[in-house]
Length: 413
Image 1 (cartoon, rainbow, N blue to C red):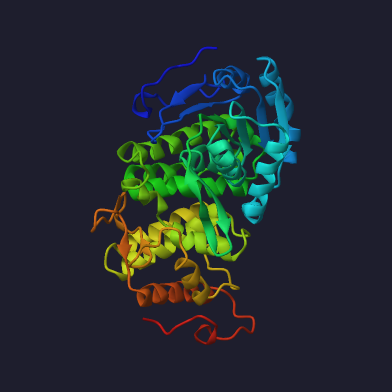
Image 2 (tube, rainbow, N blue to C red):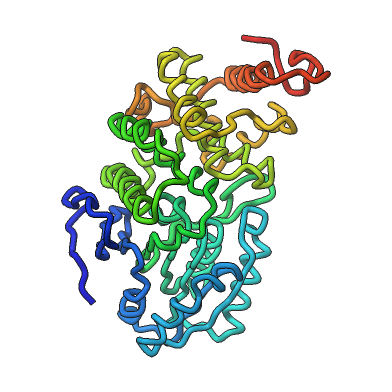
């Protein structure tokens, strides 16, 4: 097995020849601890030797039925070539299953299947599945080797590049979890060929976010590349796309490996987005909810006099005009419900919930050294109500009540 050793993301060259699958490379993630991210296209044959280095007595592949049917044979063959015994455990995944019940079931099943301190768990799936598998790995015997294999663009470019493992609670997202580093990350962009386009768009939202919070030039790239129809992108086009988004996130983590300082800017739009995602029980995809959340955060920043109207409109252009996303707050969710969910946010402090807000394109406000801003609840409520009414007024009425009489709204501020 030959690897192209790379000291850091900054020394890497973009993939320019898309006529052949690029060689496997590895990234330093700059996390603390720092699991290596192995990245490439059609690199499953490299998996066995990497797992073998962990000297496991047994490998436990945690995945779902669909992914096992699509890719299970080649993954099991890659492990078999290294004489690694593998036990497959299938779980249901998704926001509805990202809970204590699924976690308990997986942990008990792993123990039933004779997992040991010397075993390795491989989480093969989207972000919900790998979060559940990663948390199980951290809990069993106080921690065993974990390998994360994301199968979505969001997983490859965003959720796997973090040591955070969590499940949802009854009142919000990711309320219960821990920081637990995988032994390594294995990202094969070939797996993206089976991912629905909507799911890919959701991941692109997080890439655009990286530009909004840390790299204004990246926004220019997205505004250019998204002029093309995503349906026309090839497998290797998405490989190149993933490379660029990964690099943008690693520049942020290089400044804050702990994920507790400046890397908190990665939560831009997430406080509002998580509330919408949770209140719709996952019907609004994480990325789409975060796009709505960033637009709301931009409106909040404008209301506070932090950013110009042009930057707010740039949010709508990127997410609405170019990505084609529907940016309204779902009709069935009231402002009161969003406020309640925000008050249960996992970033809540003693003084209340704080928000990541922009100072300008590519830079976040940092008044107190933690890149978060406390905003009076009445201002947040006002912005939410105005945002919800903005989109209502753009729709045909069809006999609806006027916006001022709908639940959860307040008069314009």
